[in-house]
Amino acid sequence: MIEQGEMLADIPLFVAAVEAGGFAPAAVRLNLSRSAVGKAVARLEARLGAKLLHRTTRTIALTEDGQVFFEHCRRGLGELQAGRAMLDAGRREVSGRLRVSMPVLFGRQCVAPVLIRLASAHPRLELDLNFSDRLVDLLEDGFDLVLRNGPLQPWPGLMVRRVAHQHMRVCAAPSYLDAMGAPRVLADLERHQAILYGRAGRVLGWRFPGEAKPATETTPPSRLRFDDLGVIRDAAVAGHGLAWLPCWLIRPELLAGRLVTVLEDLPSHVFDTHALWPQTAHLPLRVRLALDALASELPEATSPVSLCGDAPEPGRRAEGAAATEEVRS
Image 1 (tube, rainbow, N blue to C red):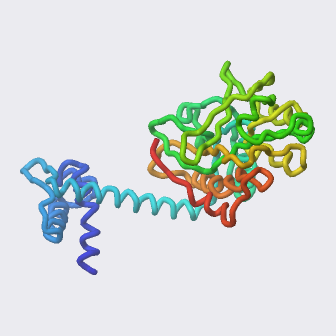
Image 2: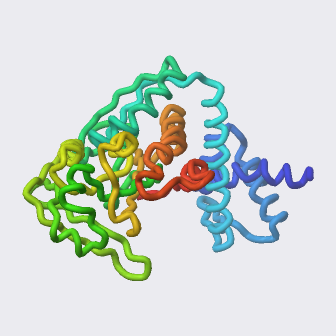
Image 3: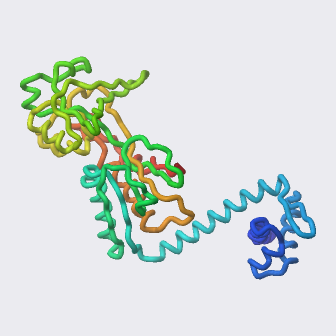
């Protein structure tokens, strides 16, 4: 055990020597003698039974074994430093400004309540929330976090974490269904009127996943097209046609009976919500807490209810919170 402790103590000296390009500059950086650094590397080689460095009077170079060992040591030291930083941050009160950008309607209804509760629990935390459906430049615009719905394009220099799933359902007002009847299969949509989402001259089709085949996309007949989901919902409540909308948006209308879901035998289209933030060695505590709060609470806020076709299974919230991931984009 003592030998293992001594070996761990020698590793930072070995890493410093490689990064500095020699024993002498590493010794200056560490405020040690050149021989102390050299002896630490020699002890490591003896304990490992492998040559780590090629040495000349002026330079050092990693051997093949040394390169492998160095990469693992550097990553390990980085993890230790990150762990220490998180512990230090945990002893401090959360403070500072948190700048977050999010889609307008989804942000207002689902994201903002989570972050406002977080701010209420931490009086020194400042919130600066931006509601926009445009693709903001996270780095250039200076945001700590950005929430995005749907597929992501590669975005170098950013980290990504999935924080929720969203389910789409077809719905209509009871008055519309009384007059037109309820569609039973996809082919029935051709005899109905739909309220569609369109932006910049492009109309979004309705997607229905297949169990063992590619998803089916259809664009039902329509004379109403809007670029605002809230307006589409309101038009559906008023009886103007069928609408294809996320469950979180129509939940109050479903519970109140102002809307009814149809085509419930078809699986719902599901897409992800991601949080993105700048890649950094030490994530600020306020950003980490916001990510954890969103990953914990958004799955429940976006999950379908029984009236929306798919009732949440027991433990669904815990599953949603656990099924998050962090990846470099």
